[in-house]
Image (cartoon, rainbow, N blue to C red; front, side):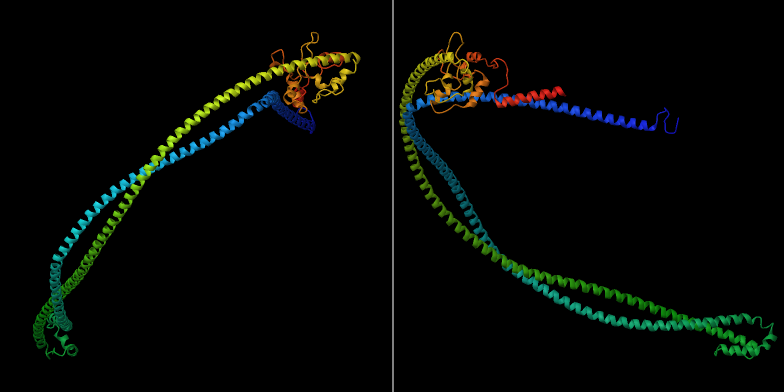
Length: 611
């Protein structure tokens, strides 16, 4: 195996081309299957649409046939109506006059009914207004009574208020004056006591300042005494030390002598009061004496110190007492000021109450006076309204009586007119019945005349047919083609005496050899219209497609001429040698719409077979 081949020995190019071909083949088959399914669905849809279209076309053909039948019936009825028009013209004029009179009567009746309804509505409205007015009268009377009671109560309240104000106002005024005087006296007393307290406070402040000065001086003296005591204590300590050393002086007298000069110099430098003896034993005694003096002076200084401390404590106590008294005086001053402000506010409140009471009294007087005036005005207005309402009620009652009289008169007139017009309608109904009976007799006579006319026409067609047979013997080859090429002429027979297409289209002769007579499609139209013009070829086509449906409608032997399919009889077609499809076999439809539907059916069937 080479490098360009796979495990099976095939080259890779072949494998790739085979895979591509397989892929395209699968894609082609899938696409073809999709197209076939799609075409099958389209065929199904087209088949359904063709069926719907054929059904709709058939329905349209049926509707056109029905329309042609209805048109024929309508034309027959037109003939009858044209005959009836002359007989019913007088009846129509009479009926119109009767209708006009009936309309007038109905209008008058409607107007009278509207007037009656309006009168009834007015009566109801007036009754409702009267009831409302009665209710208003009752309410007004109640309001008047309530206002009178309120006015009486207000008058009594005003009198009581006046009495109470007269009795209470002077008493309240005297009591308020007395209270104001007492408050003013208390205020003046408090102001005087406040002044005295302020003076005492100033005196106590001066005393406190003096005591503070004394305290400062005592503190300075105390500091000086303490310094002196400290100096003396230090001197005493030195003396005690020297006394302790004196015991050792006896043993070391020699040393003392040596240093005698040094000791003297030291003693002289220490203090002026201490005088050392020239001899050592005398100096020791002097030191002891001097120490005893120092102790006595120290004790005296301590006594002075204790006295100074006692004085200082007394001064502190006095100072505390003075501060407490100052605080008490300040609290008393604040309480007095608050009482003063309270009394002033009470005084202002009492004055404001006096002003408010006087203003309220005046306002109450004005309000009561205004209420009394408004109540009097309301009473006068209600009396005026009541008088007006009484007048309106009397006027409304008079109108009610007149309306009742008018309603009774109108009812009587309505009954009279109803009786009169009922009699007239009965007479007109009798006349209409007589006219209808005469019209029925005229219709019967016309029907008989039509039968005679049809019989005479049948005879005429027989004669024409015999004449045509006579001509056919001469021209056997040319006549059938000419008959098929001609069109039915709606203008009667030809002036040259030759048989026309119109005369051949009425009825075929009822011979024993050639079958029953056939009906023409244009005769019924010509009977209704006379010689008005040509027939409608579309109706002719519809009757040909629908078959001889109109021939089944005539049952008697003397039928009037009706529609037939072709213009020449069947025996002429058979004799001419032309090959036409028989009537029983299904051929292509003659109508253009039916032809189109038939062609679509064949086309869709061919497509379905192809797919």
